Amino acid sequence: MADVHSKAIRSKNMRAIATRDTAIEKRLAPLLTAMGFDWRAQDAALAGKPDFVIEAYRCVIFTHGCFWHHHDCYLFKVPATRTDFWMTKINSNVERDKRDVGRLRAEGWRVLIIWECALRGRSKLSDVALCERVEEWVCGGGDCAEIDLQGIHAL
Image (cartoon, rainbow, N blue to C red; front, side, top):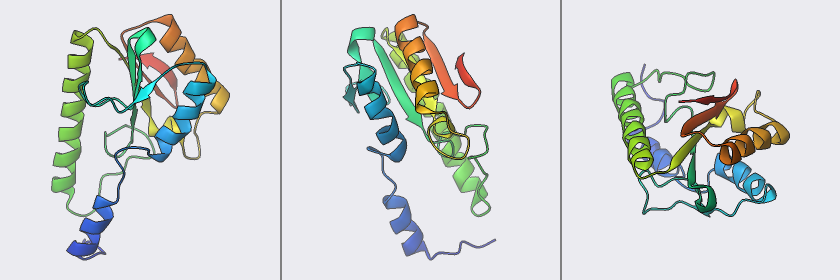
């Protein structure tokens, strides 16, 4: 199946995809503040440039888009066009994520991944449920975990 857009339009659309201040980051940021956490965003000095860094608890939080980071949920769909290209790109994102998490853990950082499906969409977690899970992990410990529609679990 051919792409419905020309190469120029597809390229323009892809360049417009934000890498910071995304909708899912904008949903989480005020919740972290409301929970009383002091955080900074997009720390380029750390592997993977985490979306949120909470220095006092030595933890970082990534908000991962389900498509771009290949999450097994209803938001991920294998592209119908240029499938090999897109799957190669997405799989390289997954490998980079693993490498970045490994570096962060080696440097003594705790890592939390919050998936897009938990933050937006028809089945997203409520603010209360999301805050409970984030606070439980940040304050409770654990090296590496993720939050998705099924809740919070260790990686």
